[in-house]
Amino acid sequence: MTGTALPTINPATGCVDAPVLRERGQREVFCGLTGIVWLHRKMQDAFFLVVGSRTCAHLIQSAAGVMIFAEPRFATAILGDRDLAGMADCNEELDRVVRELLARRPDITTLFLVGSCPSEVIKLDLGRAAERLGGEYAGRVRILNYSGSGIETTFTQGEDACLKALVPVLPEAPATQESVLVCGTLADVVEDQFGRLFAELGIPVQFFPPRRATQLPSIGPGTKLLLAQPFLNETMRALQSRGATLLSAPYPLGVEGTTAWLRAAAEAFGIAPERFASAIAAPAQRARTAVARYRPTLEGKRLFFFPQGFDQAGDLAELFARPLQRIARLKV
Ligand code: SF4
Image (cartoon, rainbow, N blue to C red; front, side):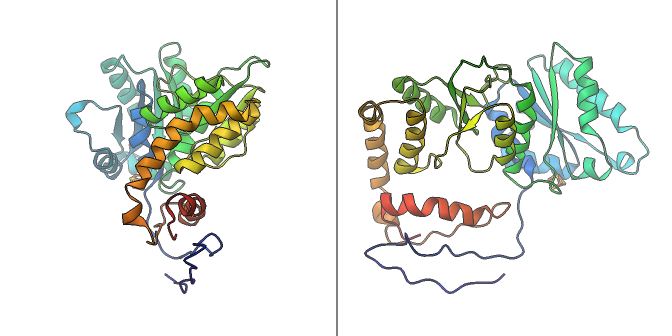
């Protein structure tokens, strides 16, 4: 790993103009399977079936911290030695596992077959498997697939791949229907808060992914896309190809980031500045008060972002630098 000399930071102006330090080199990252940890909590009627090895099962089990007795909404169809040696028909095995799973769990409405390193290495075509099984269970369960393998994806790319897999099945919105589509998994409490703010502004809003995989948002030329996460490029492109327009905005991080993010939607819908200021006044003040508690601890400190997948650390550092500088007077 190579290092760079620390820049001098002016105490009066902070780090606004200081370059973000980047360290490059060998690094280890989680694979895209980890996205299942938050995706399975969000879409409560979906199920994630990882087609992988015991390593994949251990990763998901430990990362999600869910007891196996809890019947979580994810599992691993283990590819054993016979499968890996090409001695078994993996498609037959997969069909059997899916049959048993759907018989045991009638609450599943959407099943994701999630590819892994082992399924990729033995060239198990999960796209065709999803098509075959989708036909068999048509009308009862929607079956989709994406890859979370460590060969193809890292960490957050799993969510991007999962949401992209959903885009083709989003219903078509009438050309005259205008709405904001917030894209990226949000905690339910955050989604509720944003929902209330959009309602107060009089802006119709939909969230993607939704809480129930059967209640997918509709999309069309009147859909204004607002990204809530910085790692959804593939999904964004797929949504744009369905007619959505991307609103240029920062991400909803901190008071200033969130204000600018909401303002982008307000301006797109022609909301008067006074109405906007009045709608966000109380929550913005609450956020400022919450940050104030930590200011004495964080003030003057440096933040170091560890690489966490496809060179995000530098992007995140740049993303945070300005709002943090203004809000908490941090030296980033
Ligand atoms: S998908 Fe690959 S990197 Fe991820 S847990 Fe399975 S074997 Fe490991």
